[in-house]
Length: 329
Image (cartoon, rainbow, N blue to C red; front, side):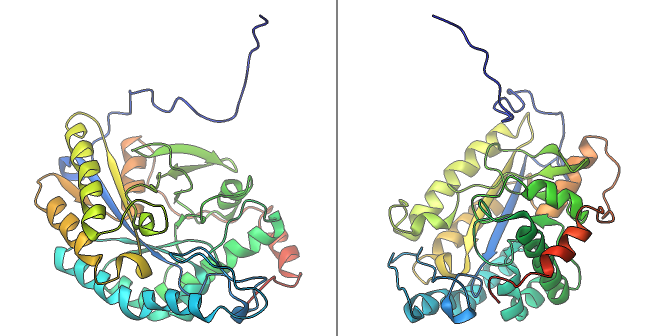
C-alpha cells in the first residue's frame, strides 16, 4: 500500500477543543443571535425580470414561462403578516436581533428595515437577490455586493457590516468582502459553535458561523418540523447543551427565522416558547451579530474595528461590471 500525503485548504481542525479564553460581556455563558431572514421580493420571479421563478418552498412546484402568482403570494405573507408577529415577540422579550436582508427585498419593503432599526436591530446583507453565488462571475458578484449594500444603507441609514450569501458562496465571495472594506464579519460558514478569524484580501474578517438545524427552514418539505413545538423543542435542546458548555468555554447559538415561515399562526408559538425559555436563564447574552463580532475581536486583543477604504481591485472591477447589463432588476 502506497501512503499518500493529502493537502487541502479546508480547515477541518478548528480549535481542536481548545478555543481562545474569551468571555462574553458581563460574564455571560452563552451569546444568542436571533437572525431574521428578509427575502420576500428578492426571490427569483419573472415578475421582476429574472431568468426563472423560485421553486423552493413548502410546496415545491416549477412554473415556467409565466409568473408564478402562487409562489409570489406565499412570499408576500412574510412581509404582510409574518413580520408584525415576529417583531412583536422580539419587542416583548427585549431581544435585539439581526435582520439578514436581501437588497432587493429591502428596496421593495423599506418600512421593515426602518421599523427594525427603530427597535434596535441590526441589518446585515443577504445578497441583492435571494440566490446562490456559487457559479456567479466575479464581476457580477461584485456588483451584487455593491447593490445590496447601497439598498440597505439607504433604508437603514447605515451600511451593513455583515454578509451571508444564500447557501453556497462563490470561491471569490470572502475575498470580495475583504476588498470592499466595509465588512466586519461574514456568516458564510456552518462549521463551529463560536466565531473565528480569517484573512480576506489581506484584512482580518470575523466569521460568525450560522446554523441550518436551529432554523425554521426545517418546516419545509422533509425538514423534520411540523408543529411549532418541534421547533421549540429542538432549539431548546441545543440551547441547554450550549448553555452548560458555556460554563468553561465561549459558546454562541444562532436561531434562524424567516418571515413567511415562523410567522405563521401555528408556528409563532414555538418561537415564543423558545424565547421565554432562553430569557429565563441568567448569563444569556442576546446580541446582534455585529456586537458578537466586535466582542470576539476585542477578546483576541485586536483594535476596535472600523470600515476601511475599498481596495483598488474592487472599485475598477465594480465599474467594469456595472457597465454590463444586469441580469435582472
